[in-house]
Amino acid sequence: MIGNLFFNRNMNPGGQKIDSDLPSEGAASSVRIFCKQDLIDDSAVLTGNIGNAAGEIENYRILSIISGKKVFLRVKALKTMPGAGGKILEIPYRSVHAESGHETNGSLFLSENNIRNVFKIIGHPIDGLEDFIDEVHIRALEKIIFRKISGPPPDFSDAIVNLPDKNLQLLLNHILHKNIASIDMLASYIYGLGECGQRMTDNLSRSVRAQVIEKVKLARLKSTYRWAGEVRYIIHRNLFAAARELGISIKGIEALDFISKSYEIAIAKNMLQSKSITGWLTDFDRDSKIGFLLSNISRKDLSRALTFAGWSDVGEIFKKYISREGVELLRQDVEFSRSLPDENRFESLEKFYRKVKDIEFTPLVAGMNFEKEVKEKISGEGQVDLIVDEIGFARTVFALKNMPFEWIKSIMPGPLLAIYEDVLGKRIKISRYEDYRISECRRDFLKALLILAGEDKI
Image (tube, rainbow, N blue to C red; front, side, top):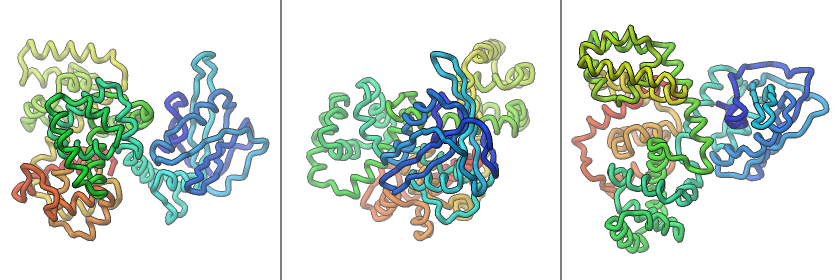
C-alpha cells in the first residue's frame, strides 16, 4: 500500500520486499518529494527506463489529497547511484504505455528517512520509530494509510459541491432517508459552506429545502466553531461512505477508492486462503445458520462470492434450504457471475465473509467484557473512526459511555471527541438514544471491532 502513494493504477505497483543494497547497474532516476509546509525536500531512488511514465508519477496527487497540503513529486535521471545507508523498502512497478504498448518495469526504493517524511506529510509523524523497515512495522504503517484513505480528505466539501446535480441529489436523499443526518445538521453544514451551500440547497426536495432555508436562518444565530466542526465531521464521513455504497465517483479523489478497493481485494484473498467458502457453508449447515445467511446477504453478492467455490460442493447444501427452482436460478446466477471482472467478484466475496463473521460473532459478543476487549484492540488515532463507518456515530458514542475519560481522549482526538463530550454533557441530543441502549450499542461495537481486527484493519 505504501507504493500506492507514489504509483497510480496505471503503474500497477506490486508486492514489496526489504533490501539492504540498491542495484549497482541499470537506468535510475530520483523521485523528489517536496512539501514546503512541512519543510521536506527529500529524494527516493527509482529504477527502470521510466520514460513517459514519469508524468504518471508527477501528476499523481494522492499525497496532496490525503494531507490537504501542496506536495510535489518530480522525477529526474540520476548519473550515479547513491549509497543505500541502511535497510530499504523495494516496491516493484509495471507500466504499459496506453498508445505504444511499451512496457516499463522497475522498482522504487524507499529509505527509512523517505518513509518518515511521507508519514509526516500525511499527518502521522513516526519520528519515535527506529529501525522500522521490517514486516511487522511496515504492516502497521499500512494500517495507518488505510485509516487515512478511509475517511474524507480535508477539502472534501469542494468535491461534494461540484458533483453533478443527479449525484448530489442521490447522496443528500440517502443520508436524509436513512436518518443519518438531521435537517438541523444539514442546515448548519450548508450555512458553513457560505455561497457554495446554495448548490446543496438547490438540490434538496422542495419540502426539505423550505425547512433547511428556515434552519439556516437560525444557524446564523446559534452556530459555533465547535458545532460547525462536529457537523462537518458527521456530514462528511457519511457522504463519503454513501458515495462508496452507491458507487458514485467523486472527481479528484478517485485514487482513494482505487487504493481502498485494492486493499479490500487483498483482504478477501487472504480470507479465502484462511477458510474456503465451502468450509464456511459446511459449518453453517451443521449449525443451522444457512437461513440466517440467506436472509442477510443479497442475491447478487452471494452468487458472485460463490464463483470462488465449486458448485458441486455447495449446491447440495442449498438444496436443503431453497426450492429446486431457486437452486437452479442461483446456479445460473453463479455461472453468469464467473464472467464478471475480478474486482466485482472479490468485492462481493469480502461482503460474504463479513456476513458470516457477523453471524458467527453475534452470540459471542454478549458474553465478552467490553472494556477489556476494546482496550486491548484499540490503541491509536483513527481506529474508532472505522467503527463509526460501520455502526454510525450515535451507536459508537453510546457504546463508549462510562469508559475512562483519559483513555477516551487518547483514542478519539478532534471532532469525534467533541461530539462524545457534548452527548455526555447533553448539549447534543440524539433522537431515540438513551442509556438503556448502551448494552445493544456495545454488542454492535464489539462485532464491528472483531470484524475489523480480523481483516487486519485495526
